[in-house]
Amino acid sequence: MLSMNNIQETLQMFQDNKLDIRTVTMGISLMDCIDSDIERSVEKVYKKITEKAKNLIAVVEAIEAEYGIPIIHKRISVTPIALLAGATESDETFKFAQVLDRAAKEVGVNFIGGYSALVQKGFTKGDTRLIKSLPVALSTTDIVCSSVNVASTKAGMNMDAIKQMGQIIKEIAHLTADSNSIGCAKLVVFSNAVEDNPFMAGAFHGVGEADVAINVGISGPGVVKAALEKVQGLPFDDVADTIKKAAFKITRVGELVAKEAASRLGVPYGIVDLSLAPTPEVGDSVARILEEMGLEVCGTHGTTAALALLNDAVKKGGAMASSHVGGLSGAFIPVSEDEGMIEAVRKGALSLDKLEAMTCVCSVGLDMIAVPGDTSAETLSAIIADEAAIGMINTKTTAVRIIPVEGKGVGDEVTFGGLLGEAPIIAVNPFGSSLFINRGGRIPAPIHSLRN
Amino acid sequence: MERSGGIGMKAVINVVGKDRIGIIADVAMALKVAHVNIDDINQTIMQGVFTMTMLVDLNQMNGSFEALQRIMTECGEKLELSIKVQRADVFTAMHQV
Image 1 (cartoon, rainbow over the protein chains, first blue to last red):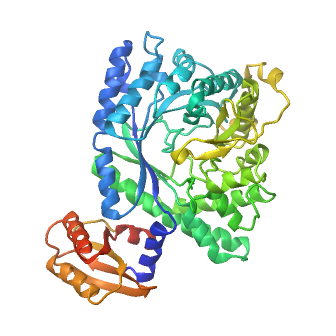
Image 2 (image 1 turned 90 degrees about the vertical axis):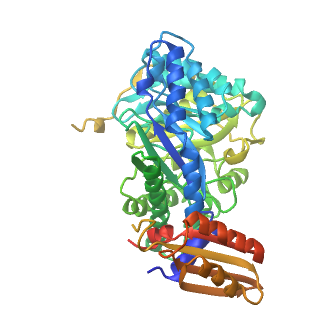
Image 3 (image 1 turned 120 degrees about the vertical axis):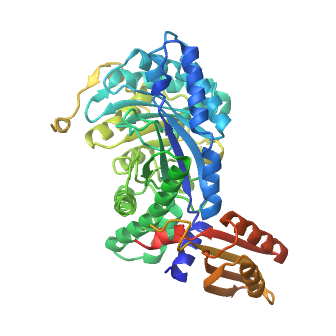
């Protein structure tokens, strides 16, 4: 029997601590939409998405109402489009982006991910076409998200791809200059990308996945922060334990929603992603959790250790609460999407270098970081290379979602709007890396990739 | 995890609004009409605001869960209170292993 104390605690999490389910993402395989004729392939893609996801919004909204759990986003991820692009005889790969945009709007989701290519070791015809099409694809669609995997622990780093991605990001920034280069916010460059991530912009539906699956991304930085307020001054053992318990409770809500959504939609339940995902709203910040542990401002010395503890405790609590944990599962540190991070950058406490250090111990990487518009393509590539190396060596996912905002420099601020938030422009190292980036080739996989 | 529907189906009802005489009576009457049994009640006044949380049993309820939600929302509008009904599954999931 439930006690009133337990009921009150849960109600408080929803009402005061902004607990919500961040996203219910339907993964849809498009492998059966491959066709040598691009028009036919595009038509199949539209039909498959609109058919499989036609009830997604209604079902998720019904769960939201019955259980009283706010579910913020309903989204779709699809098979990496490079696989479809390579099979066609056409170079007009952007048509796939446009059909994804149309189909996603038809079913009412707010983002669709999977305009993606996996090139950690090399390029296929489809990969090359897809990457080349990115500037047009992302500047002529509204809700299509893209990702490119350029490195992995098993394969090493594709430095040709990394070089190219710097140029592509510059081009997208230019084409979407009139809206603060926002096209770049829809593109993630990955190392060790995961196939079942429900979070945007990096979601895609891997080839090892079922035809259709439901993946759920939880949230809840506010709940963790509120729990930590009760253990002020106590040793880290208590901090870790408190985070674990909070993560357990949050994840149980995710598990419930995932099972219920999957069963009502008649598709398999894939995974729950345990990530603590912040929003720009006050009370929903990962930075504030780190500060609650005793840091004056997020970004100061001690921040990496605090984040390491947080990331690990979230996993330990969450893993026990769900039968299938997957995706990225940890703490996210997107700058523009986290009120505390934004404040820390404004105060000068959080730099790009510190963020890079933090990505060694968090679940993703350099995320939603606005840099000066005159940052060179080679510097962007070098930032990606550093981040990819961290992922490759540490056998973890890392990512770069960076926005060189055209016309803006250090000291300026930029507003992306909505959940993408706002960000002060962060300085990059003024010294060049172009000779390094222009070498091309591959950085070999590390010795610990040889595990067989 | 306890599943929704069938035996043992419970809900949590949260009532918030300006305090006055007879709120519990009015809400309880609406639940009686809907054939919903009250398991537990926690009620307090915080700075003049009436707050009540109820754990209720829906096994003998007339009609569907959605209908109960509708009835209680209408009841809340009439009484100028916020009344929210949600399945108890999320609470059990969180607090019972």
